[in-house]
Length: 159
Image (tube, rainbow, N blue to C red):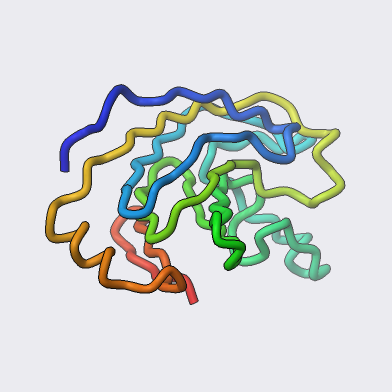
């Protein structure tokens, strides 16, 4: 895949409930890369987040329950009102969109606890040009098809 235009660079503040990234078109793959450190109250970490054992024992979970505390998370809101998908970006992930919609990012924290967050991470977003085979495959799928993403070496499909 070849790059399409220059990369977008976005500063993601830890105390923002969401930061707008842009509009994704069906068939696009975006490569996300994040760096830097931010703080959840007194706990410093990078965009990969951290494990909070005390919260686990107490059953307290961040916004996206299955992802680490304070990990950098992407949220894709489809234009067709057919749902929202959330995915872990961490330090690096690529994401292929099978529908068009808006993309936002945030630190995975409790919904009402963004006031005690500090710092920011830098996010680089590269829009990759889809290969011709992928475009024809995507055009044959319905808009309700799941989106897939890869973080590290694991590929996951949304339910």
